[in-house]
Length: 352
Image 1 (cartoon, rainbow, N blue to C red):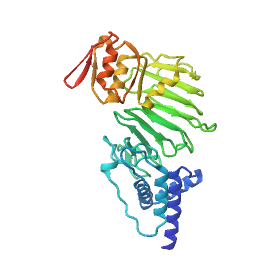
Image 2: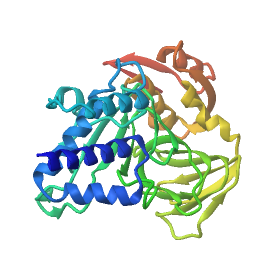
Image 3: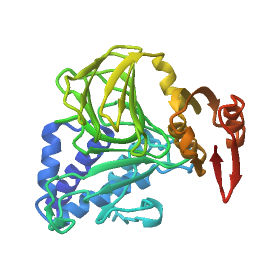
Image 4: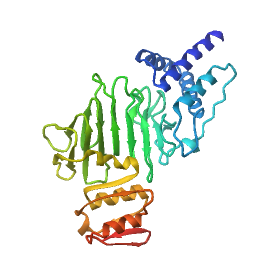
């Protein structure tokens, strides 16, 4: 029994270091190896992680306090009394969960974000979707910002990420140790921590991005007509996955626009800081298609908008604060250009 307690104390310490971001690569491998020895070990690690998060969950409008949760967790694992594990699917379940699914919050994520960890925390016997063997020891992290809200988080390597409404990123729990790769759906602003030995990569269906350390905004919602990347600092390399061409490199205050229909990818000069105004609750349209503007408004205000075909290719320029302005006030301002009109019927706004 004493030997078992010593082992558990060692594993508790590894889990604490992992969740606090201080776990070394060798220690990470030790934790993975131990978790693979039995289902009991796997469940022990999972339960301890649930205890850690239950130690730091805050009110719904506050930021998850990683340091406070870590301190409480250390205090709790220092006790020898039996642990009681509590897990609420009502609290942690995503609106459209994957199968199978185990969920818990990522440190420093605003509690309004929807998140889900799929493919299980640690390896399970079985197959993904009945066919694909589970290959990853630790699951992928999926972080989402719901409609009408934004999410701020720090990745394990210290990179700051803002996710705009209706956006999602996916990355492995080994992120920052042997890779810094993630996939993006939607829009994100990134302040990437420099790492000469480990490039930071973002993958989407149309464009792949590669940097060492920089600040940029990347917008690529699945229903947008265009992909845009705006660079504030550093340098980025962009690979066009739709059309064969040389990689495109951006310098500060340049932006790339890719047409999803033609595959054409071009760069131009821009005031890149305008691309991240949404992180301050501000909508900014820089000669954007009205169709894409409408999608921004739908995500920001969680409303339905329909556009006449004759307006979809028109471009507009403007800036609006989301808080303090209703959707009607924003549409009224756009309509004041005399380039469109709008009306509300059948629970949606119609632009014509």
